Length: 146
Image (cartoon, rainbow, N blue to C red):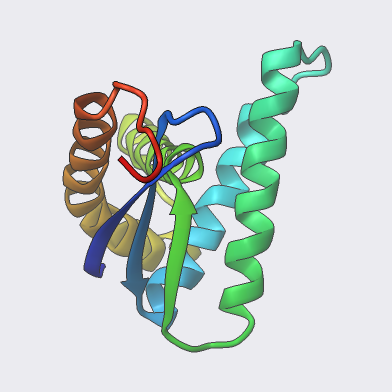
Protein backbone atom coordinates (compact mmCIF):
# COMPACT_ATOMS: atom_id res chain seq x y z
CA UNK A 1 0.00 0.00 0.00
CA UNK A 2 1.46 3.31 -1.08
CA UNK A 3 0.30 6.92 -1.37
CA UNK A 4 -2.24 6.87 1.48
CA UNK A 5 -4.31 10.05 1.65
CA UNK A 6 -7.24 11.38 3.62
CA UNK A 7 -9.92 13.38 1.85
CA UNK A 8 -11.99 15.45 4.26
CA UNK A 9 -15.39 16.62 3.10
CA UNK A 10 -18.54 17.87 4.79
CA UNK A 11 -22.01 16.49 4.19
CA UNK A 12 -25.07 18.66 3.61
CA UNK A 13 -25.53 19.07 7.37
CA UNK A 14 -21.94 20.27 7.77
CA UNK A 15 -20.74 17.09 9.46
CA UNK A 16 -17.25 15.88 8.58
CA UNK A 17 -16.87 12.95 6.21
CA UNK A 18 -13.59 11.22 5.51
CA UNK A 19 -12.66 9.17 2.47
CA UNK A 20 -9.34 7.41 2.13
CA UNK A 21 -7.34 6.70 -0.96
CA UNK A 22 -4.29 4.54 -1.52
CA UNK A 23 -2.60 2.54 -4.24
CA UNK A 24 -2.36 -1.24 -4.34
CA UNK A 25 -0.42 -3.50 -6.66
CA UNK A 26 -2.27 -6.01 -8.84
CA UNK A 27 -1.20 -8.81 -6.48
CA UNK A 28 -2.39 -6.91 -3.41
CA UNK A 29 -5.76 -6.26 -5.05
CA UNK A 30 -6.11 -9.95 -5.96
CA UNK A 31 -5.28 -10.96 -2.39
CA UNK A 32 -7.68 -8.42 -0.88
CA UNK A 33 -10.45 -9.66 -3.20
CA UNK A 34 -9.77 -13.25 -2.18
CA UNK A 35 -9.74 -12.44 1.53
CA UNK A 36 -12.87 -10.26 1.48
CA UNK A 37 -14.80 -12.93 -0.42
CA UNK A 38 -13.69 -15.64 2.04
CA UNK A 39 -14.71 -13.50 5.00
CA UNK A 40 -18.03 -12.58 3.38
CA UNK A 41 -18.92 -16.23 2.86
CA UNK A 42 -17.72 -17.41 6.26
CA UNK A 43 -19.12 -14.57 8.34
CA UNK A 44 -22.64 -14.80 6.91
CA UNK A 45 -22.92 -18.56 6.56
CA UNK A 46 -25.65 -18.89 9.20
CA UNK A 47 -29.24 -18.81 8.03
CA UNK A 48 -30.87 -16.14 10.20
CA UNK A 49 -29.57 -12.66 9.49
CA UNK A 50 -30.41 -9.63 11.60
CA UNK A 51 -30.76 -6.21 10.01
CA UNK A 52 -27.18 -5.39 11.04
CA UNK A 53 -25.98 -8.66 9.49
CA UNK A 54 -27.73 -7.82 6.22
CA UNK A 55 -26.14 -4.36 6.14
CA UNK A 56 -22.69 -5.81 6.89
CA UNK A 57 -23.20 -8.46 4.19
CA UNK A 58 -24.21 -5.76 1.73
CA UNK A 59 -21.09 -3.71 2.50
CA UNK A 60 -18.78 -6.73 2.14
CA UNK A 61 -20.52 -7.79 -1.08
CA UNK A 62 -20.04 -4.32 -2.58
CA UNK A 63 -16.41 -4.28 -1.49
CA UNK A 64 -15.84 -7.79 -2.85
CA UNK A 65 -17.42 -6.87 -6.19
CA UNK A 66 -15.29 -3.73 -6.43
CA UNK A 67 -12.06 -5.57 -5.62
CA UNK A 68 -12.84 -8.47 -7.98
CA UNK A 69 -13.56 -5.98 -10.77
CA UNK A 70 -10.16 -4.38 -10.21
CA UNK A 71 -8.44 -7.77 -9.88
CA UNK A 72 -9.77 -8.82 -13.29
CA UNK A 73 -7.80 -5.95 -14.84
CA UNK A 74 -4.49 -7.38 -13.50
CA UNK A 75 -3.17 -3.87 -12.98
CA UNK A 76 -2.15 -1.60 -10.14
CA UNK A 77 -4.96 0.68 -9.01
CA UNK A 78 -5.79 3.62 -6.81
CA UNK A 79 -8.68 2.96 -4.47
CA UNK A 80 -10.91 5.67 -3.05
CA UNK A 81 -13.09 4.29 -0.27
CA UNK A 82 -15.45 5.75 2.26
CA UNK A 83 -14.20 5.35 5.80
CA UNK A 84 -16.93 2.75 6.42
CA UNK A 85 -15.88 0.65 3.43
CA UNK A 86 -12.20 1.03 4.29
CA UNK A 87 -12.97 -0.11 7.84
CA UNK A 88 -14.82 -3.14 6.45
CA UNK A 89 -11.76 -3.97 4.31
CA UNK A 90 -9.34 -3.59 7.22
CA UNK A 91 -11.58 -5.65 9.53
CA UNK A 92 -11.95 -8.41 6.91
CA UNK A 93 -8.19 -8.64 6.43
CA UNK A 94 -7.62 -8.75 10.18
CA UNK A 95 -10.34 -11.34 10.78
CA UNK A 96 -9.01 -13.57 8.01
CA UNK A 97 -5.42 -13.38 9.27
CA UNK A 98 -6.54 -14.04 12.85
CA UNK A 99 -8.67 -17.04 11.77
CA UNK A 100 -5.74 -18.51 9.81
CA UNK A 101 -3.43 -18.05 12.80
CA UNK A 102 -5.98 -19.64 15.15
CA UNK A 103 -6.48 -22.63 12.85
CA UNK A 104 -2.76 -23.28 12.65
CA UNK A 105 -2.96 -24.54 9.07
CA UNK A 106 -3.64 -22.99 5.69
CA UNK A 107 -4.56 -24.12 2.21
CA UNK A 108 -1.69 -23.85 -0.25
CA UNK A 109 -3.56 -21.31 -2.40
CA UNK A 110 -3.98 -19.05 0.66
CA UNK A 111 -0.27 -18.73 1.53
CA UNK A 112 0.54 -15.86 -0.85
CA UNK A 113 -2.71 -14.11 0.04
CA UNK A 114 -1.85 -14.45 3.73
CA UNK A 115 1.56 -12.82 3.26
CA UNK A 116 0.14 -9.91 1.26
CA UNK A 117 -2.86 -9.38 3.54
CA UNK A 118 -0.66 -9.45 6.63
CA UNK A 119 1.65 -6.82 5.11
CA UNK A 120 -1.35 -4.52 4.54
CA UNK A 121 -2.65 -4.64 8.12
CA UNK A 122 -0.25 -2.22 9.83
CA UNK A 123 -0.30 0.52 7.16
CA UNK A 124 -4.10 0.24 7.00
CA UNK A 125 -4.36 0.41 10.79
CA UNK A 126 -2.40 3.66 10.77
CA UNK A 127 -4.50 5.15 7.95
CA UNK A 128 -7.67 4.10 9.76
CA UNK A 129 -6.51 5.73 13.00
CA UNK A 130 -5.56 8.92 11.14
CA UNK A 131 -8.95 9.00 9.39
CA UNK A 132 -10.88 8.49 12.62
CA UNK A 133 -8.84 11.17 14.34
CA UNK A 134 -9.49 13.55 11.45
CA UNK A 135 -13.24 12.99 11.63
CA UNK A 136 -13.40 13.20 15.42
CA UNK A 137 -11.23 16.30 15.43
CA UNK A 138 -13.66 18.03 13.11
CA UNK A 139 -16.87 17.05 14.88
CA UNK A 140 -18.19 20.60 14.89
CA UNK A 141 -20.48 21.34 11.93
CA UNK A 142 -18.78 23.15 9.07
CA UNK A 143 -20.47 26.19 7.62
CA UNK A 144 -19.78 26.41 3.87
CA UNK A 145 -18.12 29.66 2.91
CA UNK A 146 -17.11 30.42 6.48
